[in-house]
Image 1 (spheres, rainbow, N blue to C red):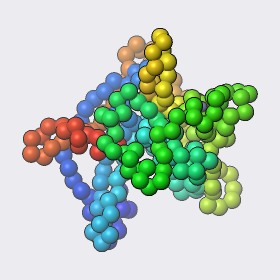
Image 2: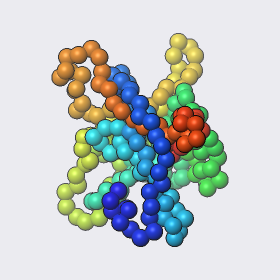
Image 3: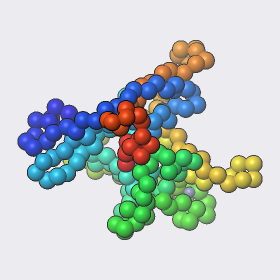
Image 4: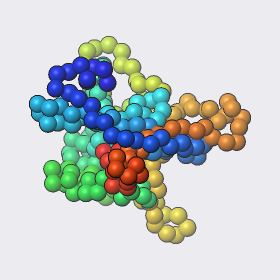
Amino acid sequence: MQHLLALPGVRRESFPARMFGAERTHFSKLDVNCGIRKMYRFFHEETNKTITLFESIDSSPLVPILFFHSSVLMNYVDAREVVSFYSSLTEDSIGLANDHPRFDLIHKPGLRSKWLARGVETGADCSTLHSVHAAGTSGINVATCQRAYRRTDDLWMTRLAFEGGTRRTVKPVLSWQLGRRAVAHGREGLQPGTVHASDDNWHMRTFKREGLWVEYYAPLDPTTGEVVGAWWRRCFP
Ligand SMILES: [Zn+2]
């Protein structure tokens, strides 16, 4: 943040926010406020551009990316390399949906139509791409399948290093599965995606039945001081 604010013409947009506490259990894992602890906004006065910075709810900065609404957004640049988790589909302007039963509550309205207008499909179901989902020997490219379990150090991502040498995966390693359509008890519904730290065994170490409490911030209406649903959704890209 200091580097951003040191640039000429960049200022931080301030808006009130309220802290909430949520229990992180073995079952909820990192699914607390879609992995976002706090949002920061910066405005560049010369170009009128806005930069949004999300602080992760966990020690891995990649957690919020894996809660984005489509695989087409699941890419990152760090000091050493550019990484795309679903590069082949992204290159074809196709994103797998990261579905969620409360999709309309946690994402901005009109997201998908905005991307469609740019020629990018963000809500694909992998059942339209293959009839057998990716598994050990199916031969299906894991990076085209919503049903696949992925890791941030797996071999299915595309990594483009700025310089030669050993690539280093951002730690801790995360594993995830996208949200998708699923059938349970004969009825079709939406199964939310899951994200967790691969080596995270805090629930084993503590020997406690209860979870850990984590903090996150929701933006408030400055006039009423209340959390406003429409504003809340702005948290998520
Ligand atoms: Zn699939």
